[in-house]
Image (cartoon, rainbow, N blue to C red; front, side):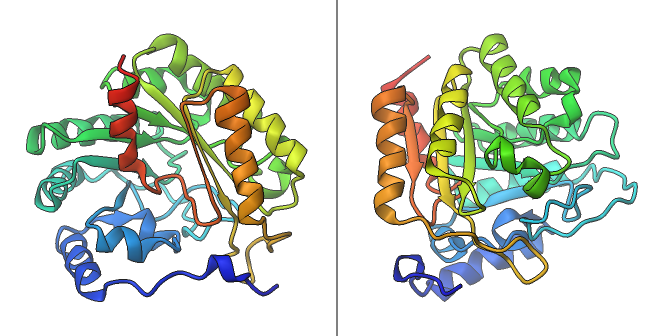
Length: 289
């Protein structure tokens, strides 16, 4: 299926990309931008931003839409990773940082303690930087969630990914209801933290199913939603079922912000979970808690 013209990406600024890539290589850090073949890598690296991927690069789940490598082996946690991440944030001069991880179902706490260590390192190296976490479901380990949330991130993101009908196809080791429960617990237990979730379209869902997911997220009082086009990383991954038009992405945004009352809906073909994540700082100023 040929990509439509609205999915064409402008040529990146190679010089600035090289600076960021060299820094990441020097500090031996992984990013989602690189590991998941994000189409916005040029724009983000050129702007001096990156979404850090901790405890990777291998993931213990093999979701058929994702380009991150599968690795079910038991691996130890690198105690030096948080300090290296904190140094990268300081050297890049980031005002807002996104920290995510692969699924680490091999760990008792799913990697919660490593998230906490990374938060501490960033605040030590760059006290003025706001912190957004994009976390896995921790297999429903609510003590692990509590560990992470007690470290007080500014934004907590957990992606719903797709509509419930497609979970067995796209996210076979995930549970739709579990993800909703996680977002609900964050809102109820830590009301000052901004909550966020995201989903892909183009996997076989209908527009009405997308509207239903938005309603479910809003019932959990989620603040921010991202909606973007699924792009298949390769022949071994799920194929694209449809290319959603920019006009329909606008409809999703209007329904979310206008009818349902989300603080922000970022909806466009190239939107990804961390795309323009730094805009949340303005949102926090406009809607302080």
